[in-house]
Length: 533
Image 1 (cartoon, one colour):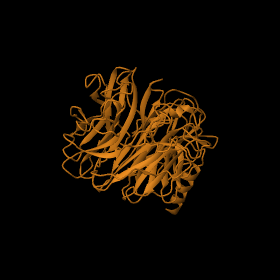
Image 2 (image 1 turned 90 degrees about the vertical axis):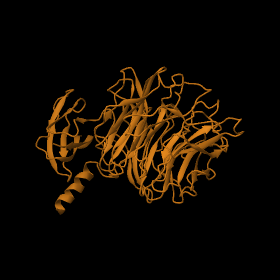
Image 3 (image 1 turned 30 degrees about the horizontal axis):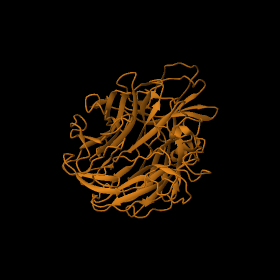
């Protein structure tokens, strides 16, 4: 037994599957673009992580598609890529959002559309941790539901995992398409009580006395569900007949979105006036077990040319909120943006953002990193900032373009998982990076590139007897299959390049395997395969 354990450790270290790979241990590079990742961690199995993002891929050339990848070992290795299909071949996808239910089913929403006049919001789900997905179903038709506003943009998904009578409810908020100008732009809500099979008619989130107003072009709502089943949203408002100050309004519903109570979350926040290229999307989260605690994060600019990250929190369910509290501790006049916030399963709060403190100057056009900070007192104070990225990325204008507006993170006990897009290799290509880091020590898995468009992928997965793969670009590689104990159970040389090839796995027992493609003593691709009969 000791020999098997030793062998397993040796193989993992030699083959690049350790939790601290060398800095150049990227899985592959995407030749085009990948951005705006979203991550979800299975509450029934925290080692099961699903990451989804936008990418220009080979399945739909020159069209943006949604791709998902999955890990079952806490982010050490990633499995097969899965593309979400388009409604029409000429359409493009965007704005993915995901949530797990507490029964282990993961739901995913995204846009599929044709600018400037067609499209909708789709939903799909997986019951096996992200390996297989149901056929996407359009539940929001922007051509027939408020068609002059096309309410399909930024569909955020929330799932009720409480133990109340509303358990299992699902909610999606949207806003008008980015090219729709005000006046009259408002945030929208739909709900489902049958796991996404059917959906309610849309409703506006704002109402008399708490309207968005006529000047806000993109009134994006943030949405979550409290531990007592209350639906919680916030959205921006500026209407002088309601208030001389702009606001962030908090709305709360105990009857599944039929009616709301409205409160002031932030009054007169300092706007970011220095540039319209900063990524200013706000976010909100609810404590998983304490219904009185929620937290809000956003970007504000109280000092000219210095956007900072601010948090507000509540301990009474949202009736009152704390003053905005700056959490980036650089004090150097450097700009921050692209903020995200989460509660952990052990009463901690983590905020993540993009940070330019390691750049040489001020403003948006600076090199950047990803940072985080942790609070143990519901956002009143935060520990010193911790750097998550291991490379300071040089500035490139492509980082300011649309399609790179958000990062995503989750905190499980004392481990933070984060994904983001940046430019490392090749230049001028945005790819997705992942880190798994202890908030106590700052050590863990260094950022590595999630499976790219040129990776070797096997299907079907799970497999029974034979699996298919495209061997183009892998001539001369040796395919090696390792068992869960690190033992080599199968190998085969790729002698020719063929668009379609097969690997016979009929001799393998049911279980989880790692397939590597190796050449010149170097892993050029790796894949996680499940054999199941």
